[in-house]
Length: 438
Image (cartoon, rainbow, N blue to C red; front, side):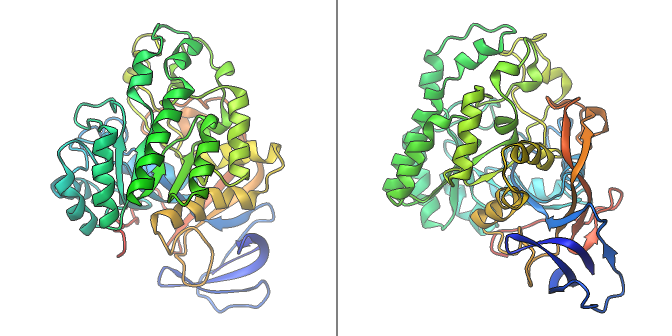
């Protein structure tokens, strides 16, 4: 049993006792009721109990590039950040998850390494359309595609026409397509100076590239009726067309990420390639507009896009943004990053948790995740919302001590995490593999 003065139930913090049986929430009663339990954990006065976060955009990179991250380090860092469920992207592992055989290989690699629950995305690349239905049958949560080169040769991008063909098959199979939406032609036509200037790098990935590709996703989704999702929105210029598409009945959802909500281009130092990601961190005014998009409900939820690599790749080119690997490592830090920014903007913690737990869980069909309710999974994070800490990259559970947040002071500390009613122990792998609709 867990009990405390502030437990997040139905969008509000209440004093409550939580009874747990067989890994699920069996009862929620007022504090003081005195539920019978063999074990009782009580929250400290400065702690709140929230549902475990659900991060549907994580690059674990195992097998094949385990030196970049790996299941053990990724899921330990997730647990340390209050994340109890992740969905692994189909790249940058080798092989990528574009066939049932590759999915089997990836699942085999998880043995004894999961500290939180893990599901999998499939991938759409040229020539693998016949793998869509078998992958759906095997329980992937949907399919990822790129509209420009992905950065790794084994996961090639598709054209808008190929995307539409895939959309029709995915819709017929009852699944979802998630898209890295940047237009390769716009980016090819942008200036590519290279070098250490972040603003030069930003000019090479303009708003127009994202906005053009999102328009293509909207157009093809409207024609096919597919459930579509725009990954890692960085361009606030697209908020209007997204809102208009949904008003017209397109089944479209959108995510953004902590780095777009906590960082801004004008603050990135020359050669600071730890900040490089694609699409890029944009201007401060754009950051503010993304927050408005969240509050207005145009952006549905927040996920990490945790995309780590080795320090050698992240710092390749000696500060040249064109050469360095693009990807932000933040899986462990998402909640304090977003809470630090949100509280400064007058946004309640209840709303932050909804963006980072209930909404992503609902969109991908994790019906027992993301909420504290009778019958739901007993996955929780114990969070101290007023505690302050300074990020030490070397102390994070990520495989490599590389993050743009090193030295940053944040508010909110995850004190402990529970999975299926049991505290997560970094020495005992207790996570499970998840399959859609199982």
